[in-house]
Length: 319
Image (cartoon, rainbow, N blue to C red):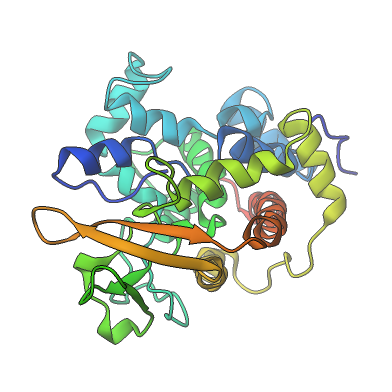
């Protein structure tokens, strides 16, 4: 029986502005990630729970849900792990870990391909698979304790649609940019980094709007209550079939399709380029119905992430 509930970062580029932008990127807010962890905790089998406790000392998946972001932030001497020896060692062993949180698929791509043009061997799909492999006994510099912490986070990340897709544009007319959804015609220089280059205001990106504002619209009295509410939601289609080692690729495909819908209701204004003639920012406006429509999408994605995380953990052949 389930227990009663109590309840990432895009490409690093060389310009200072882009570096500052990257430094504040997370998939979902802290509340969102902890919601996913708490929802999953409530669905663990007794055998899986024992494995989790063996690695973490307890079954509090919410507590470790943001460890991957905190490790990333520690490399910039920020956050609670900035002086943590384990975080320092991890960042030294895996200096590219900030790039593990996403995969930049064009909006028109029909399916994630492990060896495709838009995948990387260190994208969020491959890292989820690696974490599963480590928990099943694969030798790695990533410890089993780190693997479960990373897995809790990245299953949350992959269900944030804007961590699985990027808008690319025809910037021939900077005052009238248009989306390019044909994967064969996208120009990498015009990518918006998962909507991080789309600005609602001077400082608020559309990506952050999804990470934080839409989550907080759902949040009542904390992540535990939100997890309880989402548990009752039980969204259709969350249950996965087939080999669980392939689930992450299917999740990336699904999230990219949802991301395509997230760009609907967005009106594009003036685009500006950086000194390399690459996309810097595009001013945007949202349709009046955008918030209400996508609040429901966020609720579904958080619920699916938590339920699927538990299901994945329960399927793992623990070493």
